[in-house]
Amino acid sequence: MGHELARSSYTRVVTELDGELVPASLRKTIPEWAGDEGTRWLNGLPATIARLQDQWGLTVEGHLKGGFCSLVLRVRSTSMGPTVLKVPFPDRESRLEHAALVAYAGDGAVVAHAFDYTSRAMLLERVAPGESLGATLPLSQAVEVAGKLLGRLRRTPPPGVSFDSTLTTLRSWAHRFREASNLLSVRWPDLPLMQAAEFADQLCATTSPDWLVNRDAHLDNFLRSEREPWLLIDPKPMVGDPACDGGFLALDVMKRIPNCSNQIVSDLLWQLSECLGCSFTDLRSWALIRAVDNVGWAEEVGADQETWVNRALALAGL
Image (cartoon, rainbow, N blue to C red):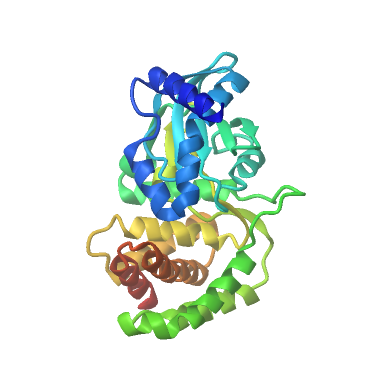
């Protein structure tokens, strides 16, 4: 019976899409990142989408670009008209995306109309015209817009929600950097592992209010909107140090700059520090720590490490 349900669900959804339910990019990345668990999630998507269609009164209209770890569909709701259905792979980072959107309440971010606890699926505001900030404005302007919007989104976290803590994350990273120093230093002798660990320790010792912040701030997660000039999508919330936002955004901007010199990186961090009201030192520390962490992540998944090593070296040289 279960196989028959899955087969009929798949036929129903694919017919509405006039093609494949799951884009090739998602079929590739999810098994690479999540192995058998990812494959099982992919196989269950047709039944999940069919259930959500009935539950929320949706007609599937097509795919949306992006969605490296989520299935994102243009849908039409019988009660709300054009909307977006997002079904994320249920990893730790997607765990509280909906809670962050509820806390933002549409102020600078997309509105979350509905949430399905079983699948973590969200029925979201459809943003039009929807071009990304990174693909639309000159880089310096884009940084200004993103920095100011991140500052506006910063707020006291809602009570009763167990967001990950920047403090706990920093301690974990510092420990991992020290544990990995012998292994990674053989291949990358100049990688500033100990410097990143020391910066993490220093940030842990800094006293500041806990804010709702975003561990995945990048320019393609800000979309042009009619309701507001720009809206954030896809938050990955944490609670803690507000410089976390800018450090992650700085890394995204660095990858968009050919021949990223120390002076260019320094100017970028100063610009973000003014937008966010955070210190240059804290932003540099967060960016370096994240770059070093991504070297280890790239090692695990077989991705390009050299890019992250070069960004870490640029930041360490400031």
